[in-house]
Structures are given as structure tokens and as C-alpha cells.
Length: 356
Image (cartoon, rainbow, N blue to C red; front, side):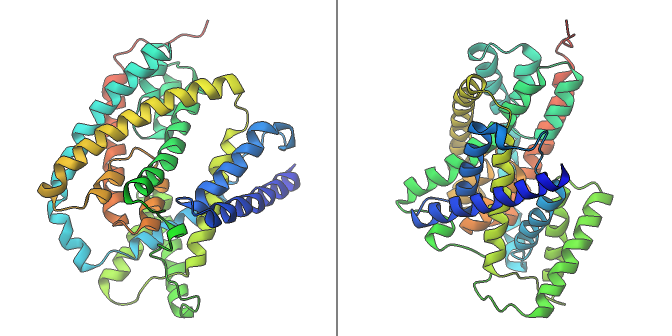
């Protein structure tokens, strides 16, 4: 079984690479991650018998590439960037407003249109905290399969719609298909710099886990890379190919989660997710537009900061678009913290569902 799972993971990455390459040549937005995601999702959805029994994408393997994304974000933290944070409190107030509005709108969609029970609708409506919403929802007796599907699709729909919307808005493809990347284009990054980056990733992963950072696989290495960069002692950098591989692996891991979803459930959940995400992006876009001048922050940075995807996926989008990924990550960490607090305070008001 272990051998079959290993070989299937390799197959997913190969297929994901082919999908990413095709998306790149078609000049699609965020091609390496989305191309990989779509191809592996098609395989896992329509050919479930090809999967090893109880297959799960290896999370420790994925962690390596999540840490890589964290390193690359941290490498962008400079004294000039820190100076921009003096206006960040304004946009964080915007996030504080965004969370309850998104929660209420999503709950209405899932309860009224999806006909989900109150508890399942409430935790499905959470605009962040995928693992926390599943854990708390399961404790309250919600339909865990529906909850997991809706939360997962929230992330998928956001990472598809946001780069697409920005491509339409700008009138050109965005991300690596447009030649945009903040990774080093120089394939001959000094060995000492790569070694420093490697050590920073290991130490960051350890500190993130021990200190219980949110999304520690990402934020631990991010913190270490930023600290090294700001100290001036050394620098952190990795070749562009590393960012491309990270997108491929993360895309394949997301696509593999489509395994086990029935067609009927997927169609209904996707329809509700489209409604939910479009509502949240509208709310986030409106708040972003109002904050442009107050926060002295460009609209694209604000819009990505208010887009309710996962921290890792949104950080990767910001990274490939070159839109201040450190600032974007800060907003998403804050959004998830606010959401988790809200789930804890409000969720207990709903009656616990008891299985019949």
C-alpha cells in the first residue's frame, strides 16, 4: 500500500506538471498551480478507482514546498516594506468588518438555499480556518462531509476566481504566465545563500510548531527569512524553478482532495460555493476600494488581502503576482484568527446536532 501510494503521488505530480505546462503555454492566470490542480482533480473525481485505497496526499512532502513559499515571502521583508505597515491598522479594521458580513451572508446562502441544518450551515459559512471549522463543527454534530466539501471548495473557487478576475481587470494574464515572479530568475543562486535558506526553513518549521504559529508550516519559515533579511547578516533566495515546483505540488495536493466526492454533491456544493465566494469577493472588493486612499495601499494588494482563501494559497498568489506577499499574509492570518474566535463565541449558541 505504501509503495502504491508513493507511485500514485509521483503520477499526480507528473500529470500536474503536464497540466501546469499546458496552462502556461495557454497564458492562463497562475498556470502552474491551477493547471496542476485541474488535471489532478479530474483524475481523482472521474477515475476514483485509479486511486490506492484510502489515499491521502503525503502532508510531510507537501510541507517542504509550503515552507519554501514561506521562505520566499519572508525574503521580501525589507526595512522599506516594514515602513508601509504604519497604515496597516486601517485595513485590519476592514478585515474585522469583513468577517461578520461574510459569515452572515454565507450562512444565509447555505441555510436558505442549500437547506443545510443550522450547525452545518454556520460552520460551512466560516470565511477562514478550514481545519478549525471542521474540528468545531464535528464537535457540534454537523454533517462533516458537507462541511469539509464546502470549506475546501471555498479555497478552490477563490484561487481560481481571484487570478482570473485580476487578469480580466488588468487586460492581461497575471502570475508566472505573464513572466511575473519575485523568486530569483538567476538559476545560479550562490550555494551559501541556498544553505542559509535551507537552515532558515528547518529552524522556522521547528519554531513555528513549538510556538504554535498559525499555519506554522508557512509562517515559521517566513518569520525566519524575514529576520535574516532584516538583520543584514545574510540573505535568503531561491531560484524561480523552486517556486514553480512548489506551485505544482501544492496544486496536485489540492486536486487530490476531490477524491470521493459524488457528482450530485459536487454540483450542489460548487453552486453554493460560487454564490458564497462571489458574495465575499464583492464585500472584500467594496471594503478594499474604500481603503485605497486611507491605507495608502494599492487596490490589488487590498483585494488579495480580503480574498477568503487559505493562507498558503493566497500567499502563493500574492507571491507570484508580486503584490506585497508579507502584507497579504498578515491580513489572512488576522482574518482566520478573527473567524476562529467568532466560531467559538457564536457556534455554542446553536443546539448541538445529535445523530439519529
